[in-house]
Structure formats: C-alpha cells, structure tokens
Length: 498
Image (tube, rainbow, N blue to C red):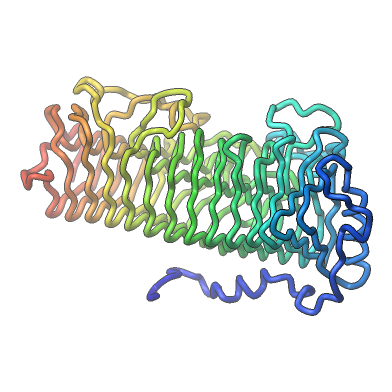
C-alpha cells in the first residue's frame, strides 16, 4: 500500500514494531504453567499467590512464558516482572476479586491529576520499571469487579492493567473486559504494541489510556469505553514531563458511549508530536470522534488523521487550546499546530447514548485570546450533520473562558458544520457539509480568525439568510466553493477583510 505512514519523521514503523517485541522472550528459557504453582482456576479459589510464584520463577530463569490453561483464575493484585509473557489459552480468564487488592501507593504529585492515574498499585495487575513484558493468547482479563466510582474504598482496585516506566511491552490477541477507571493504563512507557486486542469497557470507564508514552503502535484492535476509549495524555503523576511521540494507530475500531473516541488530553503537561491515525472506524462517541485538547501548557503538533469513518458521534472534530494550567508553575496555554484531517466521512452524527447536554455539537476549533490554533487542514471530508436548528441560533455567542474544555460547555454553536474561534491558517479543501434536517445556521462561522481558506468545497444552503459568517477575521478566501446545488455562498462579513 502506497504512502501508508506519512510523515514518519525518520522513524520507520518497522523499527517501532521490532523494538516493541519483547526481545528477551525470543530465547525464553521455557514455560511455567500456573497450575504447577498451585493455581486452581475454578472461579472461586484465590489464585494470585500461585500466579505470582509462576511469574517470579519465569523472571528468575532469565525469562519465560507463564501459561494459563482454560479456567477462571480469581485474583487479587498480580505483580508483573521483566522478561515474562502471560499467555492466556482459549477459555482462560483472569478475573479481579472484589477486595484484597494492593493499596494505592503515596504520590507527592497527586494534586495534578485525577486519583485514578495518580496511583498505580491498586490494580488487578501492575508493573513498575519492567521491560520485555507481554500478554498474549485469546483469553480474557476481566475487571468487572473493579471500582468505577471516584471514591475507591480500601482494598478495592480501580485499574485492570497498570504499567509505569516500562519498555518493550506487547499486548496481543487478548480481551480486556471492564477495568474500573482504566482497563489498560500505561504511564512513562515506550516501545509499546497493541495488536488484535479487544478492550470492552463500556460498562466501566476508560478503555486504554497511554500517558507519557513514545514509540507506540495500536493496530487491528477494537477499543471501547464508556468514558474515553483511546486516550493519549501527559500528566505529572511521575514527577516530570515527557514527550509523547512516534505513535501510530491503524486498522482499528473505536467506540466511546459517553465521551471521546480518539482523544488527546485533557491532561497535557508535556508535548505530543508525530502521531498518525489511519484506517480507523469510530462507531460512537458521546463527545468527540476526534478530540484534541491542550489545557495544561503542552504542545500538540504534527498529528495526522486519514481514512476515518464516523457514526453516532456527537461532535465529529473538537480541537481546544485552553489554559487550565494544571501542572507545576501553572503554565499558560501551549500550542496546537500542524494538524491534518483527511478522507473522513461522518454520518448519523449524534450521541450513541444519553449524555449531559445536547446530543450533537458542530465541529469546533476553539483557541484562546492570544493563543490561536494554527495550521489545521481538512481535505476530502464529508459530514452529514443532524441539523434542525432555528435561524436565531446563528446569533448565539458561546462563552469565552480559559477553563472550559468539554464540548457541551460552549452550548449550541452558531454554525451547523464548523465553528472557529481564535484560529489561523485553517484550510478546507473538498469539504462537503450537509444536514439531515433543515438548519437555519450557516455551515461555517469564524470568530477572530486569520487566513481561513475554502477550496473546492460545498455546503448545503442554510434556511437562514447566510451560509458563511466571518467576524473579526482577516485573510479569508473562497475558491470554487459553492452550495451543494452549485450556487454562490451568501456571506456575512462583520469587521472582516478577505
């Protein structure tokens, strides 16, 4: 396939894959059957002590594969080690016990992020500083009994798999079912592969959170969450900032029933760069299908999406540069720049489940005063939005505040397709925006923009009096851009110049 991985910035994807395969396992000393160490697998006996013994034996032998035959292994916290593969045979399930989990360890930096990713030991399984680790096989890790509430009682876990400061991690073929706050959580890890993994967390909270990670490939996977499905964050839980970079996500299906499907942030102390999403089907998002939020001073640059389909998505694209500054020093807004979104189709663009606020919001690029979102291109994008708004909604003025970051917090948008505020260098090329029901708002509304261009694009004619509104905007231009019927656009220009 030609041009499969654009803009690799000198890092071949093959290098990612090779680096992420646990090298120590290529010559593993042998296999270690958990039954030989006392595991019963009857669904009621606690097997974590036996599992820990098998893991320790494999690690002490210089590396090996810990085998789980078919059965249900009821477990408290399992302690992971380097140079070990957990291989879950068909019919094998590691199931979280409802109590007896490790306590949450102290963290001097817990004020900078939520409880769930300030602590890592209160999990079904955790590893810190390990390398050459894998989970393989077609079995299941079941975190249904883990805690989803914000307040986590003593002895309860709130994470399925928790890895910190790890290297060369592979998750392949396994299913992760529920997981409290996070089915899979990694922080400060590098050289990570998720391949043909199912993460089914629509009855708990987040699916996969990759925080402060680098050299990552997610492929051939199905990732679902009630909260964010696949999220990239950069918090301060490890007492420093990281650069999250060289990340590839492709050939996967993503669903968030109540929040974001593909998400950056909101935690964003460090920078993100060189990230590519390709051939991804988003089958639902209660907030954004594509969400990019820098709110804590970090920069998000060189991020590219292509061949993305969306269905049952509340807000197709939501890009926000704000200033919560929830990191040491209370940093000002960072930067969002060099973002490309191409070959995207969105239909049935409304929330897949009841959520707070309205069921749909127009795609939005929202910077802050003095901090524009810059250099974003939309190419070959076709969206069919619900529509149905009255013409007076074209006059709404969404609130202005550095603290806002949830799509619903701006309320109804003054456009049915795209609303831009504090943005520069934004281009729309071959972009089609239509509605299912007549809408009185314009297709596009721009507030405080610079160099906004439309080329070879088409919009369905608003039932209001204008199709494009620009306010306090300089350098806007249209080339071969019309209504879907081929008519010239009706433009309202307020304190703006082409």
